[in-house]
Length: 213
Image (tube, rainbow, N blue to C red; front, side, top):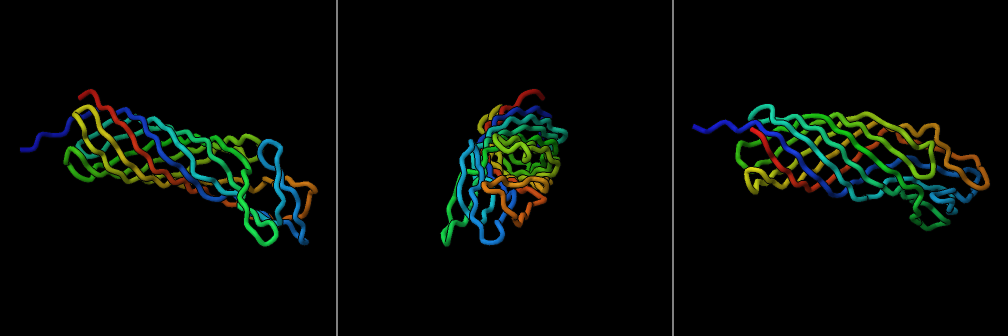
């Protein structure tokens, strides 16, 4: 007869890559190619551009409590300093410029489910996600949004107390940039197309310590 799996607490450190989707697209009307302001008082000339998050390093901590043999409650926090890249059209050529830098803090509370009873096992997770954006230059982009996250991964047991985890995650939150106006010199009439949702992608490796029983 298989012995029941022990109820345990788990604490871990996770790190890896995080990316996210677009913030907005903007185009100057009447053929203008103004200088758009960017981080640190810089700028670039373009008739139109899209602002999108680049991939950056992410670091996080998680805390988990087994609630039964096959599932656990999980809470975590992750931080990342993400570059916002302007994909701009200058004349007939495309250029990339650093537009902004955003500190992103993600808080997740949810559940994780083992997919097998083996000591090393695949798992899936679901969580409520709170994401806070703190820009370095354009305060109008600052916001805190609510959404959800799905995850899929694999846990490799090393010892009874230590394990490695590989996890891929996709999060979706609301996004409010409707009232933001990309500043330019000179100020021009624009066609502004903001996004209403933000998709967050993560690929993480974690070290997990287990204790209690």
